[in-house]
Image (cartoon, rainbow, N blue to C red; front, side, top):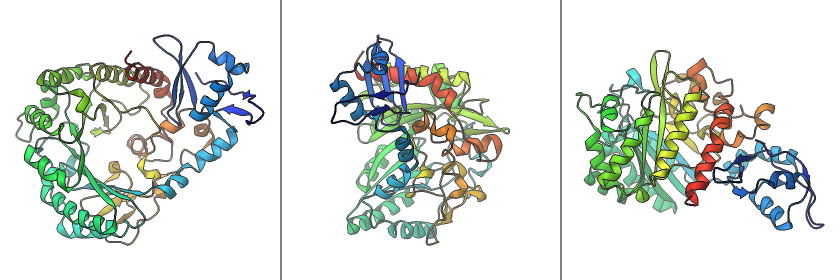
Length: 445
């Protein structure tokens, strides 16, 4: 439930404080309660009588000071709302990293049954050398005033464009060194081409991390992610993973349907038996698959689902997170999660040089904001970056975890992005369990 808003009398040297809009209190499975800020991510274990003592101004000075430091107690609710409205303007002014998703191709050596790229996949859709030159020029002009350039190479399967990735990285390393900034990159890969030799060759060029997709145990994975020939891909991926994760940061991702997510922990058991050390793996995160308009789409959603708020998805999310954590693996924490469309220095460059603000919209002409051949991308008003700046969202304690939800999934459902992709019901059903998990496993309970 939301912690009741009230005024707290502090010492004479401290201003009267109010409880932040973005504070939640949940029961803790080991006793007591958990105090959590969706804005700051601060978490504290509290006694059952804490909310009553807070309302009745019975907290100690030390407790009040701690709450202020955590962002639980604030000076003024109206000022907090104004700060939230100005949040991204401030972040964009301070941000010193240029982030780019580079879609190297829409070609793949797998034939996943749910691929969101659909008919666009496996056509002649590789980034050309001319586009590479334009991309490097585009990036070089935007490095001044930054401290870091980070490229996430994406596909299709990006390693099918390995020579281009090497070429881009070699050139960007030289440019970054000349300008006195850092260059790093990551890969989102199916893992089949991720041989030890490939990893070893990319690390000196700036490879920082990998995201490798494995859809559960072998039986399920090979059904959902077969090679184009129909042969399985599971064992090749696992063998490559076992070499890579000790050399570089690796996150395992996987995509589940409503009727098979309970079998995904079998993958984790298999990896543990194979000898994988969960403490050396960056993270594990499984996501659902959506069907819409007769086509399958990779997203935050599940089979037959067009909304994250469907009850089965809440159950699946809590279940899988628990299974990941109890086996000693890490998974991304619940925290403030802005969409990349809200940041000025984040772009998606498609294989043809066309620029978007979200990878979900690649090849949708209405959502183009520019081209790497042009001087500057157009401000992306078409993505509705201020959609969340309305009374309902601003009064919602879950706003920092959502900021209007996923524009692309609203587009999937309605063909438009004029409405907020509200995730209130999902967070109502899951957030308490998620924070309980984080407190238990962080404290070893």
